[in-house]
Amino acid sequence: PNDVKKSKSEVLFNHVQPFYTSLVLYVMAFLFGCFGMLLSQLSKEGWSKALFKSMTSLIIVAFIVQTIGIASRVYLQGRPPVTNLYSSAVFIGWFCVIIGLVVDRKMKLGLGGLMASVLGFSSLIIAHNLGGSGDTMEMMQAVLDSNFWLATHVVVITIGYSAAFFAGFLGTAYVLLGVFTKTFDRERGKSLASMTYGVVCFAAFMSFVGTVLGGIWADQSWGRFWGWDAKENGAAIIVLMTLLILHARWCGMIRDRGLAVLAISCNIITAWSWFGTNMLGVGLHSYGFTQSAVFWIVVYVTSQLLLMGIGMLP
Image (tube, rainbow, N blue to C red):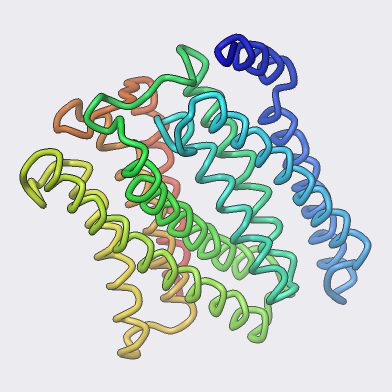
């Protein structure tokens, strides 16, 4: 009887398509955000409160719908929210939205919401493409088939991915607004740099905790804490990069602009750890292999290197 009930629930889930609905709402929120930013450029008086509230409301509704979708998958699978590459994309976007809403509540610049909408619909598009060729409910390889480690190591390290991506997108916003807009003054620059710094701190902490939990899990599953597996190396590089950024900041080696430029590198490193290691087809973490993504990874990394170069211009 329980299987029949779950089958009916899965049919309803596939019919409702909560993630597609969320994607549409995130796009609408993004358009509101762009319109608000355009008006702020023309009037030079900051964001319209009505547009800011409209964007935030749409993001909250999209977030609630996406949360219902994630909760439905958890119920149908009987597993934590991250079980394969598809669900990791959905979860990363979902947590990025949380960070964006928190940042906007603290800073009230509108940029957190704008980044949240961008990352929300981008991650859902990635998930849609990942799920287009197979079963989105499939599990990782058997050695990862453990609710405890899926709920601790995998979820925590995925939250670290989310924070690192968000920090990188804030760095991207700093460079693009500084180069292509006239209203990006010193005060707004400091506020955006402060956001980036806080998110980098959070990314460093969650990535470190997730990596340590992964080592404990590996010790129990494979008999070794660390094996220089490609996925393990990718996680370690995220930790080292975020710590490098914080060290450079604390020692006065970089200021606001340097922080933004280095934060963009988090996008490259996180994309490598999340997708790139799977494309190698080696190691005990090689799941979700997709050769078609190689071209887009190269394009994405090139665009981020270009942004970093622009950010370093005098």
